[in-house]
Length: 121
Image (cartoon, rainbow, N blue to C red; front, side):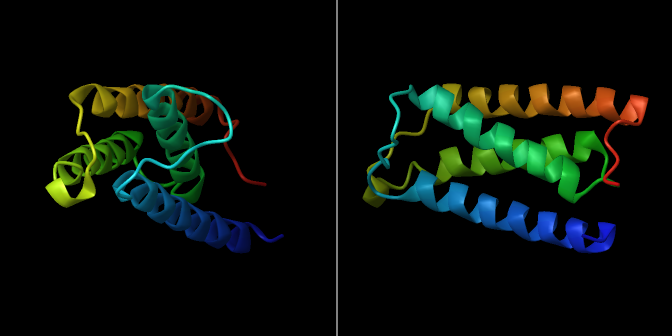
């Protein structure tokens, strides 16, 4: 696959994953997952995946900008979960879990960018 086509595909996959995350976070009932895990683990997995996709989909973007954007998404989700009709619980700890996962992936991506091992060939 050509690098431009791969990049476009990654951008589409990122936006689809972000939409999926938003829908799952705002469903009136928390979706069940096939494996038993805590709410915080689910947050971290979702935002680690989004962060990884963002790093590859937007390689020219500063990691700091990606971090702020994804952390803002996590914060917005928690605020939206305060809407009574959703019957969801907004928790500051959930947002911290999101930020931790984003920071971890961005830290690894930063190392990759410095060593030049993040190139899509």
